[in-house]
Image 1 (cartoon, rainbow, N blue to C red):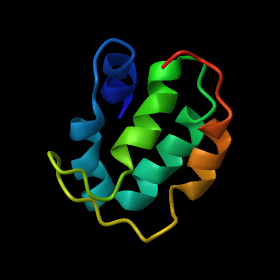
Image 2: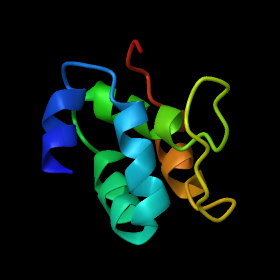
Image 3: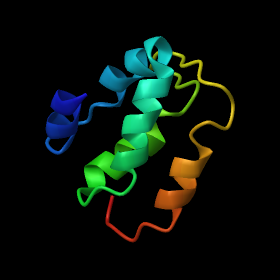
Image 4: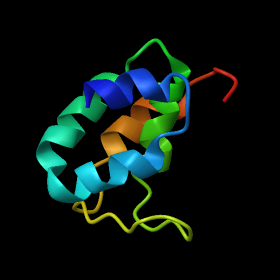
Length: 82
């Protein structure tokens, strides 16, 4: 997860995060909780992209419905240029 934190500040990494959400949802969601307040906007953007349950070109993720909503609420008013 620390590697994803560093790489996301340079590249799009939502597809790399999806297997973590499927295999270790509790730990991954705990990391996302901290990332939703991170100073780098790419990490905040990663939350909105990686927690989408069904991307047409990506892996389907299976977290319980609504688990990511608190993080999305936190970044909803983000004024950064994404």
